[in-house]
Amino acid sequence: MATILIENLTKVYPPTPTYPQQVQALGGVSMSVTGNVFVAVLGPSGSGKTTLLNIVAGVEEPTAGAVRVVQDGVPAQVGYVFQEPRLLPWRSVLDNMLYVQNRKSDRSKREAEFYLSMVGLSDVAHLYPAQLSAGMQQRVGIARAFLVNPDVLLMDEPFSHMDALTGRSLRDYLQRIWAHTRKTALFVTHDVGEAVELADRILMLRPGGVVFDDIPVNLPRPRRPDDAAVHAVETEVLRRFDSMEAAVRFGDQRN
Amino acid sequence: MAYDTSVTPDAVADLSAREIRRSVMGRWGLRAGVVIGWMAFIGVWYVFSGAVLGTQQLPPPHTVAAEVWQVVTGDGFGTTLWASLFRVIVGCTMALSASIVLGMVIAYSAWWRGLLGILTRFFVSIPTVALAILALILFGASGLGPMLTAALVATPYVMSSVAQGLTRVDRRLIVMSESFGRTRSQIITGVLLPSSVLAVIGGARQAFALAWRITLLTEVFASSDGVGFQIKRSFESYDVRGLLAWTALFIGLMFIFENFVFRQLERRAFGGAHVSLATAESTR
Image (cartoon, rainbow over all chains, first blue to last red; front, side):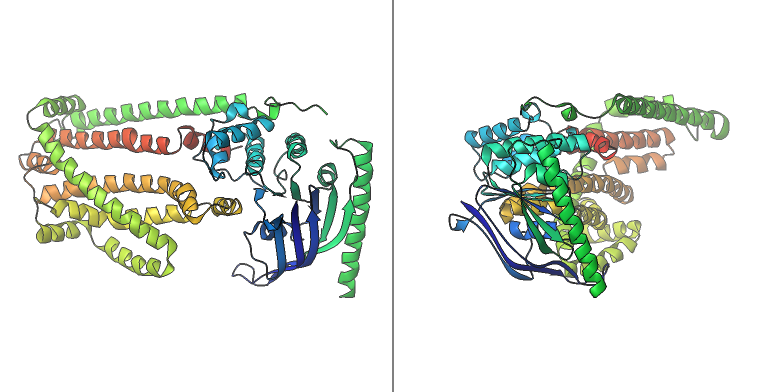
């Protein structure tokens, strides 16, 4: 069983020539995620969502605090879906998939083809990224993340650059592929509807990188954005979001 | 909930009919422009040849074309061409090899960037003719001289291009590779080297063009064979027709290498569709 354990995580970016002030991206985040759950990290811009994900993925170092990402006591394999697909332009879709595989065999090729079929891209495996639409490229990004058979799946606003219809279609693909694999997932978003549609639990970050709220979403799957139950939870999350904004404003006045 | 496993409408390549039409028209427009440009050039040449300078001073295009044919089908063309081409290829290879190594050093080390930056500025400021004569005095005309001159003159320019290409590697691809646990060597072979291919091909193209010019220049100064020597001989015997014919051959060879070697290499490196479609992608 995969576990993400985050203790008092702080990240402060030092001043740079272009931004001569230090920036606190995370201000002591503590949380834990255990088991086959889909957790959405929701927050406005500047709340440190991407920084949190990068630290969990191990591509950024924290200033203080600790992160443990383990599967049965050993370091977990992580799959990452980025905001933009990040495909290698000189490799075909299939070769992009195989790039993240440790072993190159017929089996790994079959696995890659399977995950491509899960996102409806079997027919374009031989094409190059520039020959695909933005939505198709992101689907390759999703399939690639599942291909490494990750214990933990990290997703950083993967649909934020998509138009509404493409985003909806991609969410459907993600729900389907996640239902099949049920990996521990940490999904960063600033879209309340997206969070409610996908997650079992929503962690709300406030500006400055502090966990403000932890909201369970106990709804049956698959979910649709037009479901009444989804809409009700969305309203509740928005209400809490407003109270967070009020708290931030109140805090600002006090300071 | 039913999921559709087929390619959904959003999956259809979204170059609209209008974009495709515009792209096709643009391509034909470009071709028409090239044809019109050539026709205008040849027309102006005829006018200057017939009415301004006279056919002795500037032979008309068809006379030069006939001379080109005579040169190509005559004795010694292959030997002359190979003499120059061999020097160009060796000079270009030396320049490119040095440029890849130095370009990598510049791209990844600030200290070397500073040092080589000074040396580059120094070399670039030396007149090519002076460098060519100096290299000929030092290394001799028939042997290494022209090749080393070509390599020396081309290296600073090609090195800068290669270094610029290398520093433009998309760091996000490196982060992606790290997040998937790729090792350092996998990142070098999977991301850094392929990213640099375009820069290296660009460098090779630049090295070749510079090596051609410089080799010919050195052959004009001091050589007993090669295309440069033939151009000099035509000039000395006031054979404008021969001079223009060899110049046309020189241009033709450059064109052949550009279109049938470097462009093909570029296409091959990026799986054919990448280069042309990347432009379409960026306009979406």
